[in-house]
Amino acid sequence: MKRVLLTIKGKVQGVGFRRFTLQKARALGLTGYVRNLDDGNVEVLVQGAYPAVDQLIISCEQGPIHAEVNDLLVEEDDGDEIYLDFSVTG
Image (cartoon, rainbow, N blue to C red; front, side, top):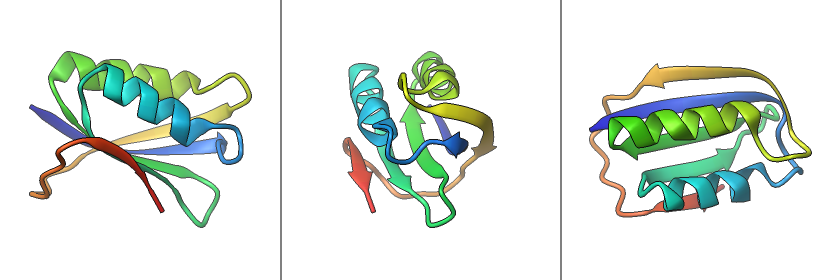
């Protein structure tokens, strides 16, 4: 199992990024959440099988059609919260 925290920077709010990420994560069988941050970035906590998590990272680098991703930070996350599904929070 792989668990990472993503911070996506650029034009990523108001362009359907959370819905896009939700659909991709659920299709890949991943759990966690996506949320908007006060600084205009989007945060994604995702956990699941290594190849599926890597695929979501690639999807987030591109984003939905109206998004402009300038930077994507990936951090290993060692939290112990258990997520049963993938959801939009905040």
